[in-house]
Amino acid sequence: MPKTRVVVVDDSALVRSILTEIINRQPDMSCVGAAADPYAAREMIRNLDPDVITLDIEMPRMDGLDFLSKLMRLRPMPVVMVSTLTERGAEVTLRALELGAVDFVAKPKIGISDGIRQLAQEITDKIRIAAKARVARHLSAPPSALPNPDGNATNASEGFATPPAPVSALGRLSTEKLIFIGASTGGTEATREVLMAMPADAPAVLITQHMPPGFTKSYAARLDSLCRIAVKEAVDGERVLPGHAYLAPGGFHLSIERSGANYIARVTSEEPVNRHRPSVEVLFLSAARVAGRNAIGVMLTGMGADGARAMKVMRDAGAYNVAQDEASCVVFGMPREAIAAGACHEVLPLKRIGTHLIEHLRSTSGVALSRV
Image (cartoon, rainbow, N blue to C red):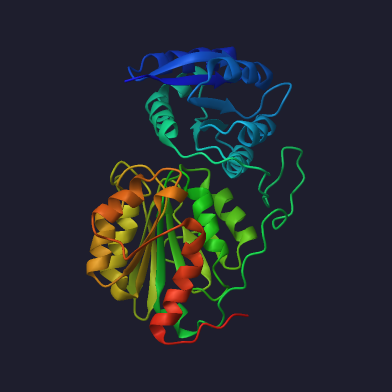
C-alpha cells in the first residue's frame, strides 16, 4: 500500500524534528517535508503534493489561520491542527475547524519534546483518519462569535445564510422528548448545523462529541452564541430542560437518569468506553434505559463504531434514530456502523437533519406543521 505523505508546518525546529521522527516511524506514512512557515509550506505543497499536513497556529510571516483559510479555498486538503492547551488555543482551534481543518491535537502543558512524544499515538491516528476524510472547498470563511486572531469578536450571524424559520410552539412535546447526538471527527461543525435548525422551544438535546478536556467550554460557548436554544457544558445532577443543549465535558461521560417527572444529567469520570471518554455508547445506552420511546438518536460524522451498538438498543427500546449520510460526512465511520447495526430509521444529508427532527416530532403527534 502507498504510504500517506505528510508535510509538517511548525515554526519550532524541535517540533518539526520530533513530528518528522514520529511520522517516519510509522510503516504506513512518511514525512515528505517540514516547513518553518506558511510560505515555505506553500511551495512544499505545490512540489510534493502531500496527502495530509499538520499545521501549527502561531507562526511568523503568516498566521496559521490565514494560511488555512487560503488553503481551503484554493487547494482543499486534509489538515490536522497542532494546538496549545489554553483557553485562547481552544478558541483558535475551533476557528480552524470552522475553516475546514479535519481535526486537532492539543499539546500538553509539559515540555515540548516530552509532550509531543507523549501524543505520538494520537497524532498518527489522526493523520490516518485525516487521510481518509472528505474535505470540501471553503469559498468563504464561516463566522464565529469567538475572537479573531486580532482579538476582535466577529458577528455570529455574518456569513451564514439566515436559518429557516423554526417550527413553532412544540409545547408538551418538548418536555416529553429528548434528542441525543453522538459525533466525532468533523462533528463540531455537524453538530452546529443541527442545533442551528432547532427552535427555541425544542426538546432538550444531549451531546457527546469526542473532544479532550479544555476545549468543550469554549465549544459550548460558541454554539450558545449561534443557536436559538441555550447551549452549555453539562453539570452533574442538573435538571435537563427543554430549549437547552448539554455538551459532555471533555474527559467525562454524559448520561441521563430519571428523578420523578424530571430528567437529570449525570457527568462521571468512569473508565473510557470504546477508548473514549466521553463515549457515545454511554450516552445512548442511558437514553435507551431511561427515555425509551421518548428518545430521538442522531449519529453524526466520526471515525470508528462508538455508539453504534447502543443506538440499536435505543431503537429496540422504541427510539427514533437518524444517521448522517456518507456524502455529507467528513468521516463516515460512526454513521456507517450504526446503519449496519440496523439502528437507524432514516439516513439524511446533514442540512436536512435538524429540520427533519422537528417535523418528525410534530407529524407523529398529529400537530399541523406551521411556521413562525
